Image (cartoon, rainbow, N blue to C red; front, side):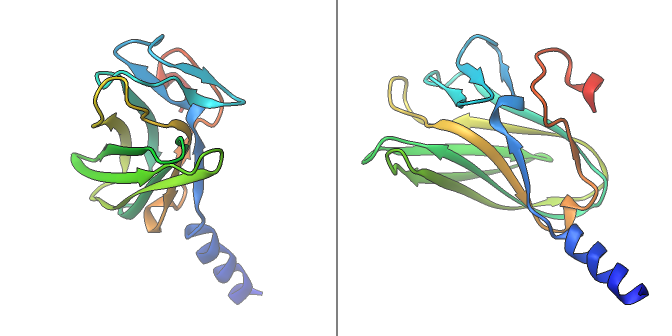
Length: 160
């Protein structure tokens, strides 16, 4: 019985977390893109606009991060994700109506606490950045992680 509980806890610690795009905040212009539960974040085309998620990481360690999005066929998007003071870039090729993944690799979360996840486009104005579906987190640092998975348009700290 004890062995079974240990295995369930270990499996839960390695579980992937999908944070919907519609739970993110837009900065500096909250009207800079469309945000909806059905479509995620669409019409993001201003390189000055950042997409922000906030979460509480309770277990230090490796955190693998990626973003799932839709991008027109034959389009390429270059994005940067910053977490815990570390930035990683990823390029992704469009798949038309199919979801594609921008993989940012691993980030080292040195200590438990609240983290901001900042997604930026490195594309020029007018070029498609992609319609965001979700932020995907995996690895040891996802154990007991806490994100608000409902859409809120007011202060992030109130909902964690």
